[in-house]
Every structure is written in C-alpha cells, then in structure tokens.
Image (tube, rainbow, N blue to C red):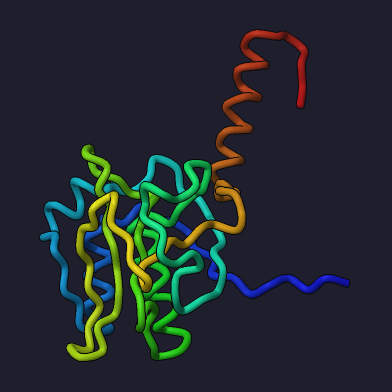
Length: 177
C-alpha cells in the first residue's frame, strides 16, 4: 500500500496580498521590494478560491532552473501561495522555508515576464520578497510545482452547481439534476 507523501496544502484566500504580508510581519521580520499598493495591484486575490498541494520541502523542489527554463505546463507556485506557505510552515515549526536557496514564484508574472522570489536571510533573520529576472537561475534558486491540480472550494462548486441547475430548469422544463 502506497502512503501519501506529506504536502503543504495551500488554500487561497480573498485577503489582499498586503494583508497576507501584514500577517507575516506580525510573526517575523519581512523585507519586501514591493509596497502594499504594489502588492495589491500586481498580485490581487484570485477570482476563484482554490486549494493546491505542494511537496513538503524546506527548499524548492527543482533547483538551478530559471522561470524561463521551467516546464511551461508546470503549475508553479504563485507569490501569494508562497507567502501563505511561509506562514503555515512558521506556525507549524517556528522555522522558515528557503534557508539556503530561494523560491522563484513562476505562477506569478509581470507583463515583461519577470517573476517574484522569496527566501529567508539568516544573517538578517528575515524573509525577503523581491523580483527576479525571467532568465536568471542559480544553484540555490528554484521552482516549487503543485503536486495536485487546483481544486475549487466546495462552496464554489456548490454555487456553480446551483447556477447550472437553475440554467437547466430555466431552459429545459422538467429537467432535474
């Protein structure tokens, strides 16, 4: 019998990204290249709240690969998911992720293709959030890939089912689900 590997289960939220960052700051030191307005503008909450699982690993799972070199089909971690992962891991262990390397948040892109990155700097005892050139890679920088596809929260699914049911009732008399 195959046992399921431990994963980080990240449930997106409709909080602003600056609110996620504020929660981080309430727990530990954070330095960000972005101010709150930029975080909220460039990394807004998703239109639909999803749940994704990522390999339970302190460091990125694919090292020395740039965002450009990564598999285009890969569903890379977003900045918001990486920030939520940091909070989850810190609350669970009292420790930080990316203590040797950094995570390239390839699921979040600017219009020019550049991506944000996140790491913990032990010399300053703080988490750093910065931008990263699409072509850059390094031995300790890497990607985190979702190990499960996105799934919608049950409330979102129920809402969609009700909409479909109403559409069918409105357009196909006597049809039931």
